[in-house]
Length: 271
Image (cartoon, rainbow, N blue to C red; front, side, top):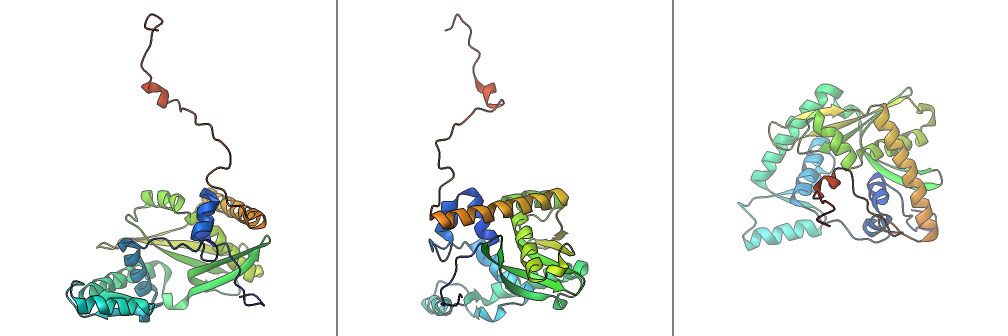
């Protein structure tokens, strides 16, 4: 909140990802601008529950419902009541499966990182960077007088190292790296250049494979470049109150060399 109790639209990594694709999409989904929430899928619900159980943050908002399924009127009414109060209703047998998966994933992560109790959990940062008001929530942060470590949890269909690279680019995780590094080093400038950032990729399906990954130099530079461009674009769009689509010009679409292979051979006589 500002001094006048008016919330300021802030740039987050997730907004930045949309912004670099089309500013109008970022505006549409920003809570304080377009205000349209993305549709929540069953897969997103699974990730939300698992993340709460893995991190132990917000678990009190999960309410177990002792019912076989959601087909009865009583179960449906209870689910509606829980959700209207901001909670998450889960069938009790399904909750047991979530809990077992979360425990397995957490044990695997701790093999690499040590006890997660040593980390600050779900830390929200609000900071100003290059004249832009920013925000973000870090899953895990361990900080000392000498260095810091950020760990971000990512549910994925495949935690295989070869598949992780595609996920990082597709979902803008490289931008998230740059933004969260910016957040911590703005709040603790003496730690600039003295931190590490790990992604903890995990699979929801048994055996719940986990891969801990860090970005190489080129990927870090790419993420920082995107974050800088996002801040510049955000500032320009806010100042002009103009949020273009993918392009604000007529575009010329060119055929790629491999597309031309589909052209049928045509002789002068046929013409």
